Image (tube, rainbow, N blue to C red; front, side, top):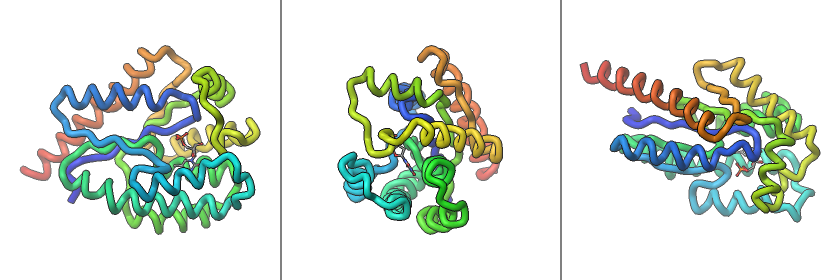
Length: 219
Ligand code: TMP
């Protein structure tokens, strides 16, 4: 049985995931909790190599199915090599994106049918599921402005038409609507301080329900 739990930060590109994740890591560490930060695509040596292949802007010819299977391959490795062992040690795993991104980008934005996405995702997940997805929601055109203002180049997916990123954003909102117990949507157009405050509320309530359920298990 897992002693730890896993929270995923996801949402529009440029919504401020990295900054929020660093602050939350600090917040939890100060409480004496053991935190493991990770990301997708990536998270393991194999996953990071897969990430390079997926995001390489000079290969626009990558087929949608290849892309989907590469995300799935990286996720399978990530779960077995890194996430399951960390949870078994009682760590709080925080991942910058995870399986909800596949539904948003490969299904809602790319248009791959749900059955195929679910098949590949289920193979990768092998019964695993994160405890919570925190979606930092932002208009993608605003997100891309932020990416540009940081002086960063666009990866292969960010380089898609704006309509693609709008569909991906709506994909997150639809998933949140369908599974409210697994998703929290935070308005990322607010100030950094307000976003962090909202995120901390979610994290605190997760911590208390997690503590309550671990007490129940020991009772
Ligand atoms: P990042 O910008 O958060 O590092 O994520 C890299 C890109 O990969 C981002 O555009 C979202 C995309 N992505 C998918 O299309 N499907 C997935 O399953 C994951 C994890 C990410």
